[in-house]
Amino acid sequence: MTFQQYIDNPLGRKNAVFSQRDMFKEVYTKKFDAVFMREGGRLNYFLWYDKHHDSWYAHIKVPSEVVPKFYYDVVIKFTTKDNALRVSNSLKDYDVAFFSNDPAFVFTYERVFHKNGMFVEELKPKASKIALRKDPDEKNPYGIPGYVKSIYFAWLFLRHDNLFNKLTYTTRGQQFNLQSMLSNIEDTDKKIADRQREGERVAKEEKTKEKIDRDLGKKRDTSTDIPKVKASNQVKPGRIVGSVHKIKKIPSVKTANKKI
Image (tube, rainbow, N blue to C red; front, side, top):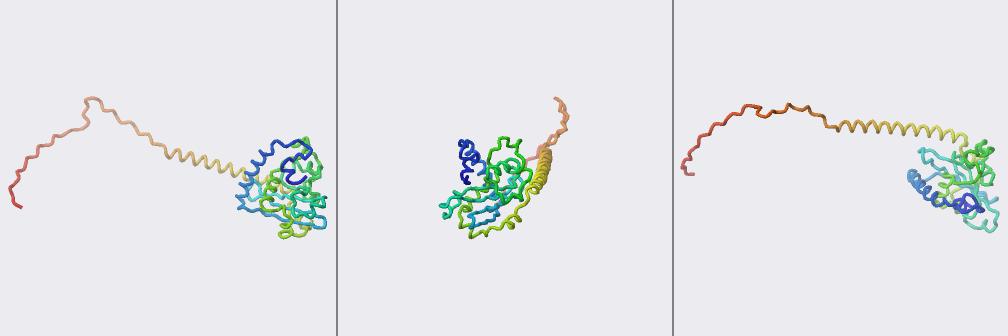
């Protein structure tokens, strides 16, 4: 399966057309655009190439949508058995395999991708051992591949940054070294624990902020209340409120015929 085929239909070429493709494309593209803008229009990534085995690797630090400054390791491996593609400068028609320490991938698809030959085997030391061995009976009882947001984000970024071009790998990347790659990828179990802790912290901060906003809102509403004025005694008909004095008539002053 090529990366484009995965985006078009993650269920595979033998399955029916994926009816929700356009919906996912719209939702994930909007989400990626928002995250990409938050990150200042750039993501950290590492490129590796192994010309001897014609293998190409893109390692993207994909940001969490919920937790700021938190990144998942997403790796895409490109390979092919087609000799005609080997002389091409494009990776678009290469087969792909994936790795991600995103919990959504780990608990729902890691085992499924591995069974379907869509998992980067070299990165098993960084994977969740339990997820690789145990079928996701609860989250994915039918064991079918599906969309993973972090992988979809990676695809959008590869298109944006011209990372389907082999020349980009040879100019910006380095020759493949497994130990060097492994040292730059965080262990999946640790990443999941960190994500849970950071998620709880962010949720707590949001609740605190909401409470402060509510309290401030109440104070603002109270401060704008018009104080009640105590009603004065009504004036009964015929009651004299105050004495009224007559003003004496001012005597008229005669004007003198005076030359100016």
